[in-house]
Image (cartoon, protein in one colour):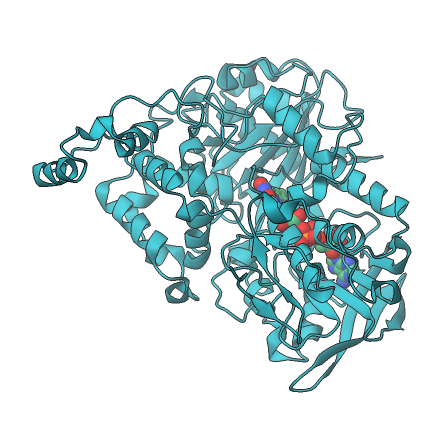
Length: 632
Ligand SMILES: Cc1cc2nc3c(=O)[nH]c(=O)nc-3n(C[C@H](O)[C@H](O)[C@H](O)COP(=O)(O)OP(=O)(O)OC[C@H]3O[C@@H](n4cnc5c(N)ncnc54)[C@H](O)[C@@H]3O)c2cc1C
């Protein structure tokens, strides 16, 4: 059986996708000529770090031949988490993750954990999530800290279900440059499904219908976990400490050089109709211009956009700035310079020129004493002060009647290696951060100081009015964090807006990260997508004889499809019209549907009878939920 050829860049080199174990365990032979090649990676986020990892592990490139240029003084990009000497612990957000981050886990199985002896990063993550599985006991609240009465149900009307299904099956080409709100109506936006979706994925009505569709296809296996978040997983600590630090340490041990405070301003190409060759990297380093000429034996891998560009922090007494100008040295400026050289290099302004649709603000909250935790405990129904890495909120808790649509989650504790035992680390964000006044603080989230954000949050926790201001002033410290491009990749787009990971004719370069076009089935705003682009770029350029794991076939898995449809209908049982019932009996030789294999499938995934007891079943509402070890 031949393997489908997906991307051809030169005579023999192409990337192909695989699944299953056959390819997963094959160690690729050393690519020809790799000892004469070097690699220069632009940006020090997970995309570049992963690319360096794949170059070394699978491409067998000597780490001494790899250089990463990072614009700031630390690697990790989006995957942050730092103890600032003046401000304390800071992190922009939290990463929901899952089993089917195929490329990320493929890499992390080879990186030693810094927290568990003799375990890889993957094994640490796996064991933690097995011992302390994530799930929420209260996904949404209203009326100042009361559980929302229909929490757990999707409440999608037949019309809204139909609209979703239509989008699910619509071809991606039909969705180019169209907004999600064109495809659904008021009934859909009134559903619980929408609140769960919006807060979990941050795809707003104004974002691309294409992205909404791709997300539904890719994450259909999570529908059963939307109401209790039992199908998602979290790292032990913040993502800098749990993912980036071990990877950086391992890369440095292999000899990789990381050059910090170097903002790449352009990559210069020689372009003919047949070939595109990167010739020079230019940068700004401490205000000085510099650069490096590269040859066809040098790979240049460029992260050409970032959701956290122009991130601005405020503090407890100062709002965060909303910085929307793009200066030389910005990653968007770099991409603009590159895009100006060839139409195949994409259209950056589709993503970076519409900050009204791509900005939101988060807040990093830290409690300072024992006055706020009881309010948290009442909602989350767990002791928040446990210091054993167990879930507390178990993911986001969303305040349904908040004007900002405020969501917050208490992180696994400790969230930093040296975190104090008596403080809680909380991440909050407002879907509507830009213009809607809060319910308690009559200002837009982005105009608020940390203290004002604390007041609004405490109001929604149910803290009595006469205590809100004092607790916000004394019992908590809040740092607002404005991210003008955080959802830039969700803006309506079409093919060609993002360059291919390895564009046609590219000889020695590729694009990495959220703004490079990979397999059309995988989705952005994920760590996985960035690592996928890294794997694809490295495997293509070095012609590595191993498949890149394809995105898991969620939309093709009948179990996931059956269960997600049952979830959307709130487990309303199937009533077969008499002629269809008769037809099934006829086809199965007169047997009752429930006694057939098909009947068992329908039972196990929520369509008829009671849910099955089989081990292999998706997470369904049970408390504690039946978390899967899974086929899905
Ligand atoms: C708040 C938040 C929540 C998220 N939630 C989730 C989630 O729930 N699940 C999930 O899977 N993913 C989530 N993500 C997304 C995920 O973290 C990112 O998609 C991924 O980490 C992006 O990695 P990257 O390397 O492609 O880009 P980035 O991390 O953006 O890295 C780009 C790097 O380039 C550097 N740089 C910028 N300009 C230059 C220049 N001119 N020269 C050199 N270097 C430059 C930057 O400093 C940065 O280090 C979230 C991200 C954020 C910020």
